[in-house]
Amino acid sequence: MRLSPPLHQRFPFVSSLIEIKLGEICQNKSVVLNDINVDIKPNEFVYLIGKTGSGKSSLLKLLYGELKLSGGTGHIDNFDLNALRKRDIPKLRRTLGIVFQDFQLLTDRSVLGNLLFVMGASGWKDKKEMHKRAKEVLQLVGVENKINSMPFALSGGEQQRVAIARALLNRPSLILADEPTGNLDPETSEEIMRLLLAISKEEKTSVLMATHDMSMVEKYPGRILRVEQGTIREVNTINQFDPLSSFNPNE
Image (tube, rainbow, N blue to C red; front, side):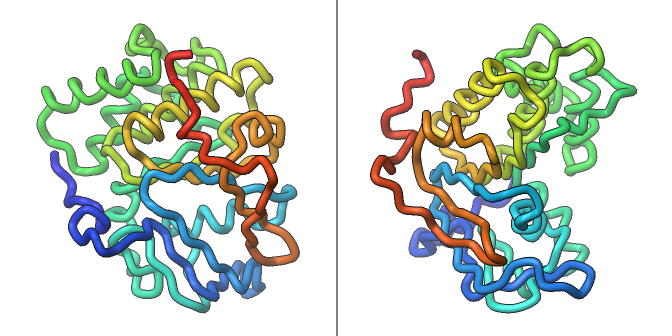
């Protein structure tokens, strides 16, 4: 199955994958975030940091269509957030990869079954192509030997690798990662961090990663958006550089 090319590929003059200007997000009629100004380019790796409850997840929910933009303007790839209709949300989510802290694997089916379920739900029809793509993404994240395993038989790190593989199925232009290392030990967290960096570089996929793990931000410093006092601001650090420019996935 082929998805329509992302906006920045079909119209090269569109330089931003995500752009929000003076945005506002409300939940239960209360303002969660306002005066949001975010601009993320294709192929960027961006951290989203902030205290628990500060609104990091609210921004991610806006981007995958669970929350609406209450004010301002915004787009994510070829979707206008101001005009997003309920029927558009499945189409939006097929262009994204979403990785959650708690993995959210279906416990009643194997690793392969989890991937086939997602592909079936997102419009894939050809069984041969589905199996081929499932094997490709599992190989990409290094767990191809777990294809017939059940989630309960996997370690936390392996489950998160499967979750990342699931996020890659539709060749997204953007991965939204919500605390992807939050339930993992430090060593496994670093493995997942390096995997996300490698995927971003090799697959030319942008990543917006919400995290409170500042040790990873310090080890792989890069562009940082901080959520605090009800808004989002970019953090400029002395050591800031593009983590992908110096990251070697083979190290």
